[in-house]
Image (spheres, rainbow, N blue to C red):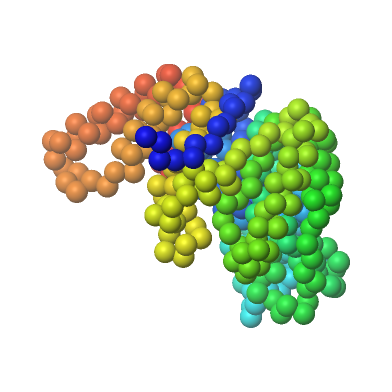
Length: 318
């Protein structure tokens, strides 16, 4: 008996290998799946500007990342009482002084720019077609930072507009592989009908881009959560965000779609070692703990031998 509507996915011809540079960029999906990928030792960076949602902001930030052009005082805006940020970053970058903000964002930019030069895979998760444009600067902002609504003009980014900015991004970097996905998280502030229109426009735009460019591909995270996992038990209490179980299911489907088969046994060993590295000892003076430490050292050496390009430093991160 079949109890799911399983989404049929054709695996990529080229697939991700350990040691290849990856960049996860965009909505919360990028954070979730990118975090799992990085936690298994892949050479990945996740959202160096924070979570982004609309195609325009994602394309503009990727352009900034590719050039490495530093942020300056002109980019800084006062976003709260005594706090500063830029319209290119999300609220996680709020800082209490202009200097601290610029130091933080430019350090993150420099690190991500160097990584980007060696990046082969860019996984982009689009969240919404709705954009907010600053009335004073005229630019689409990545985040309104809780500033008064009268400072912005809310607009619907059309299919044609999304196709244009995403196409320019892909066309300018033929040496890189782009994987697009549309976030299954509903934006309830737009209303359910408005959310559906927004997602539909993104899906149409991505489909057009993937038909046009051989280095652009689509992963159906949207369909997996809404159809394959069509049950509220896969959602948290807010009925919008997926549970940890749902996230891991989507990750497993992504791994089947995009990760090289030879990496799968290494991923399993990396997960085992990661769990050991994150283990908190209750009795560090015990004989059992000394045996545990010996096993951990052996597994570390074995994994380094099997896959020298695996980022061991990422395994110890929570």
